[in-house]
Length: 446
Image 1 (cartoon, rainbow, N blue to C red):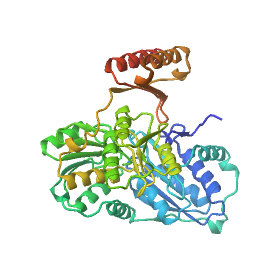
Image 2 (cartoon, rainbow, N blue to C red):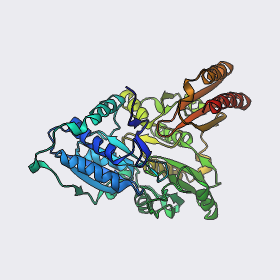
Image 3 (cartoon, rainbow, N blue to C red):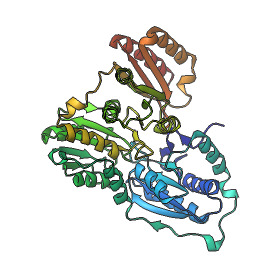
Image 4 (cartoon, rainbow, N blue to C red):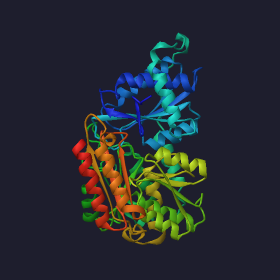
């Protein structure tokens, strides 16, 4: 059955349009309650980011859970990884984060976490989809078992403490001049608090959320203002989170961007040389650069690849004993501490290397030479262009031309009506030819 609610990363869409409606949130909360705690009597952790519709969606979730005899525990505005952590630490039935991540305020979404603090598998999401259709047909809690929501005021503090525990106290943090961009999103309190407790000199931006300015000219998807602030402040490093702070982008002291691949290579090197890297390598998606794989191979390490989505990275890490994985977009999972992508935790690992070595971010952050790579996003309406013969033929021709000297990844976004075309090759001209041919075909059919 084709999915009507869940995409690559939970449920996401334009607010008050299917699937992202109050009705969807209500159906989901009731279906999840029946699926994971049919007898009621347990807590459910609920967090949200700063967008205007967050409290509306949260209210629907609270109503559904209360009607089923589960106690909604509202932690307010917190990063997504904080919901995963608090769900795991409190023994909750499950956790819900109300967020549309890097999308603008007009969108919202729902991310769910198991009692272990991990994102649900495809199989569980399909089970929930089925249960959502019948959510209003089943029984509810007896009047005496209907619950009232509870507030958890210490959620941000507990999350920050766990992140800081992962960074051994060492001299040097107080010498770091950091510009921190919190995207007017979920980390607007947690991020500055953590860095100040480390002793860093911190210049903050994107910490004045008003419900509509999340990811607007700030954050990991728009780093122009951060880059300017780094250069103007002569900072050692700039760090940008996205709206729910489960990923980051770094700007070095020269104003150049370091993507998730370079950051993962940096962290992998640090863990490897301190004998803390598990699994014989790390996990990334098909979007990560060929240069990362070649670099790891030179250290005798492997790069295991999964399809796009940090939950697939996490699943592979748990199944095969890795403790580092992530995505080129900046979702980085450090599973010795966290169970999902965690922008703050990853940022602390990068700052730790700067503090320990005293080297510039432009030096430690240029770990490998990336293969020429380019990504193009193409918006479409109606029929999926990838199902047309013209696009299929263009993809086949491009792959045949590149052979083992390049890679092509063409996929439909799970969160937006976009076709993402990524090409990379050892030779830039080859990459450009493959990309142009496929993009031209997709645009013609879009």
